[in-house]
Amino acid sequence: MGNSSSRLDLKVLILGIGNTLLSDEGVGVRVIERLHEGYEFSDHVSIMEGGVLGLDLLGPISEADRS
Image (cartoon, rainbow, N blue to C red):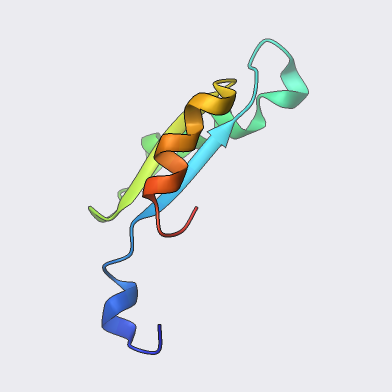
């Protein structure tokens, strides 16, 4: 990872999890909503609302170099 150009190729996952029905646990989902509304990210960055998917998130998490 010493080469800065290799860092630009890393797959990054920003994952928001939580239950929006329980107001204090839905913060991750709300953050993802705000990121979609107000920001643009490069192609190597994925933004995902995970809700309460639990083990179903293992695939997307394992595919990312950074999460």
